[in-house]
Length: 479
Image 1 (tube, rainbow, N blue to C red):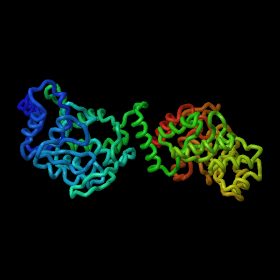
Image 2 (image 1 turned 30 degrees about the horizontal axis):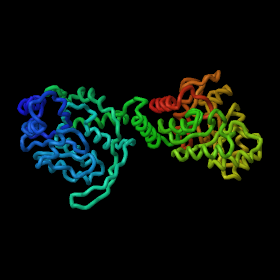
Image 3 (image 1 turned 30 degrees about the vertical axis):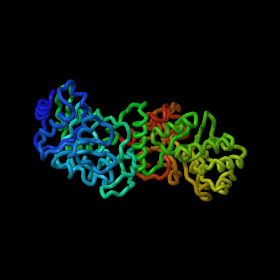
Image 4 (image 1 turned 90 degrees about the vertical axis):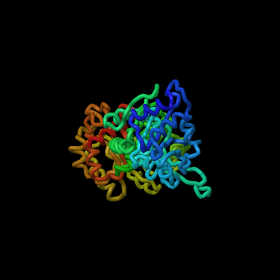
């Protein structure tokens, strides 16, 4: 290969005079060549002509061809310290101008969008889609919630030193290589070879438009599903968390028992799934309310330090020493208790006197009995109820068709336990048993409930927290 043969191959690939092309490259991929990096760049400039424009990324060590463009006397360097580009040709100034003033490095107003708007191309010479920086433009335009902010101090074109933060900045790992099939199917990418190098020539504007369509349909479209990829696990979690905050009125938590056994494990699993709150029910196989005061206080401090909210502590059985229980809860900084319907008249008064909030959960009572017990309580106290569908199955009731419709306590419902089981109490995945959980979730969402939905609350989920989140997401997707 030499300059003339490379130029001829570029023309055959589809590049022509006056085109604009953003080049991502590997000189080594060409194989044996009878020329140097300057000849390769000259081949591009020869094809494009003086009115055409060659652009390369120069924000890191991206290969000798990019360095060759950057060092040329006529090269124009974009004015941002992030996502920086170098350009040679008729549109170089226009493309690179005012890059530093953009809100994002790759999004609106950036050189990447200008190249697309000017009808430019992306050329991947001996590299794959993982090097296609313009795909970060798609992420920035979608304002995907897993993107970060980045701050740099730099010298502006007027010579002043400035510190600026750019929004929607990409993280370390993407699964861009999986997009080839979409670009082929849409007819916006042409593949060929130059020497030994695989060459992809892509229409930038059409690629961005297609990427936006894919991302609007599935915000995780450039994330991998490898459970060992910590970057994509974190980014999937950010998407789920943002979805809950944006689309749902309820607040989502998970039971500590479902999340794990030890505190660090619980924290890691909650972070990995994007759930930002937990209900303390069991820790290391013990009821959380039975832990010594100092131990519970330490555990709660660890959760809070990890950025997790404690939605409540669940009390399976009212202890004989109520004062001690309340003191332990207060010292731990917990504000809300989930209690079985009480047999102790003074208990609720003491809870209120302690400045705590309580929610009453059905255990094995029938709806008729619950209504009878709740009326005098509601006449005296401000409280809410926790609806546990599995416990209504235990009471031989249809949780939606009967318990929900007949029970007056739903008017003050503050929590729905997201669990399911068969009539014989065998735990099942969501909508796999008799708790009518799908119907309950649907109707409660219609009411724009602002209370809690708790995965694994008050019953056993037959799987991991990750599986429960996937199960729950699938239900929401099909409502």
